[in-house]
Length: 394
Ligand code: PLP
Image 1 (cartoon, protein in one colour):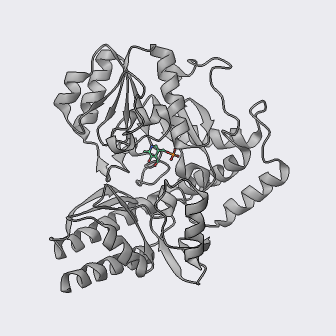
Image 2 (cartoon, protein in one colour):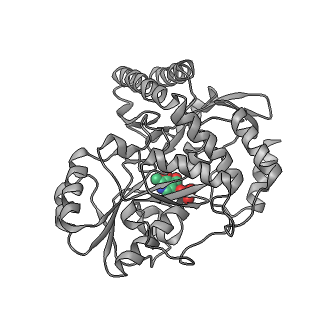
């Protein structure tokens, strides 16, 4: 039965995805149910999208209410729901103005356009090695990981990279010709790598001298995932541009780039636009996400439970030093670096009805829904422990 849809997948779609062998029927809370009635604990939550899990009653209601009024009007109109959503988003990001999009990569594109418009074509834009900023041409040009770029060159000119956490490299490369630096403060795709406070301190110091813009790519790490509103809140950093997507739409396509007052008039009317960006139904879901994460205490629970989760993982690391090389992350954004490729462990966990993702070949990436409880975490820990125990006894 499942083979049928895998066969159809091959016939119908360009082969860009490595599909999981599950035929999902529906989701509820932190669980996914397949057509055979199996229940899975979903600890990668649509790659950090489903922050409130599946079928959250308030999201379902908000979407139904909005879609029964209008699903789409076009950006020739501004609507109450877009305003209510954006007021909350700007308030928690402490930014001045927003442009709403449909996705992460599109938000990055908008930020690049704003930077180019402000500084012209010749000034350099930097990102960090191992970063991931998206798949469209501008965002791909910024992405540090070569494997995503091979075959698609030439990419945008005047984009270069700072070696990850290399303060000396930063000092060498940043100068008067710098327009901006893009930062994923906790690299997701790259393997849950935390930017060092030393690098951030030096960037802030250099910004005073050279007046470039700091862009925080919070597409994966934002909206409470790390136990703070945004990952930059861990670093005492005030970015000039904040880019969000993924969790912000409660499962519907939505993204945004947010700017500081100093650059809020770079675009004039007609200089940037989108048909679907800021869709009212997505904004209705997004408003619920912001209210639940930031105003009901959920983010504080993520911070507390994230510490518990992290410490328990360190205990497991002590028990299996030959398997686990490192545990990294903050809140509910955690990477377990294995000393071997993680595909077998991910498969074994799936057989135990726990879903996790593997990134950068040997890092188990855990991105649980923010509504996960201690008992969900304990279920995960128990099964990871069992999986490693069985592997070591073989
Ligand atoms: N930036 C980061 C940090 C991401 O994690 C992603 C997606 O994984 C993107 C950008 C691209 O977002 P999207 O897939 O919505 O285009």
